[in-house]
Image (cartoon, rainbow, N blue to C red):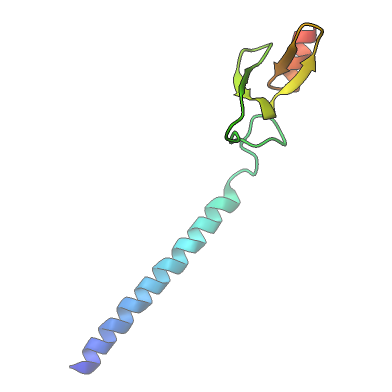
Length: 92
């Protein structure tokens, strides 16, 4: 009787351990298969930092955190662009 209970307990512990290991392996595989950059602009973070101001792109009108925008200073004001393509489009 005690042998049977001990066998069941060991089986439960083994299944629990194997599920945890498999979960870690699946999570690691998912992270490895995801693209490294999810931001639309290369080299910039996809998540905005807290406390940053949103600025409107001078070319396409997209709002993005100021820290991710490209700044172009003029005599009147600073103009912000969300990408180099928008900056080129506005200057053309």
